[in-house]
Length: 231
Image 1 (spheres, rainbow, N blue to C red):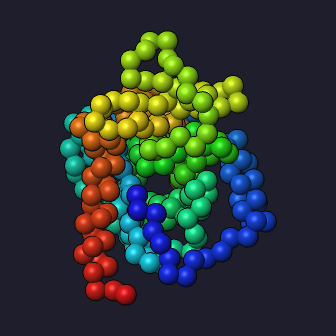
Image 2: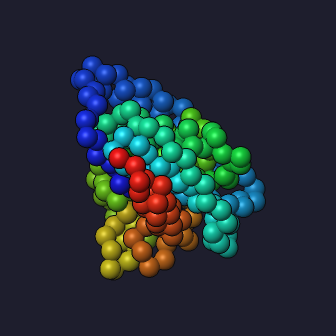
């Protein structure tokens, strides 16, 4: 995701920031980490956001499951009112994606977000926030570890786990020798085991799952077209 740059950046004071952190901690108590997906699972939607100054283009790409065929692309343009703060991405990108999802004519069976799920200092990253507030099964796939220590798995291979305050919160996948690791964690209504299995199935030659790669590609393409003649 291109997190975007403002010409005039909004300011979030320390008190507001502290309250938002406490809100995420409170919300984390409601996250469910068991599999509650539709049976059979028929589709997965990947989402991404592209920015141009104070505007944001949210894109969702719908893929069939298990065939992984691109079925549809949806988009929405909004204004952005919250700055980029790494651990508070929920209130920037998360709210944009929630608004996008609530205005869709369909509800995806499963959502994949290029952000953290519970592998987050407040146990409620952007993927968890979106899943919880839309009541959608959600997987978070991120490029960076922002909390926890890596624990080698007993089975070895290309999978390790993230441990934070004595709890396993995510998995670290090194699936491609040409690219760096990714962090997978459940967002809401899905277990870590299933989140990892589905993510592994959607990984090809690129670093991120093909669903998120396509969402990013479409967001960049549409943003360049839609924002081309705007200031």
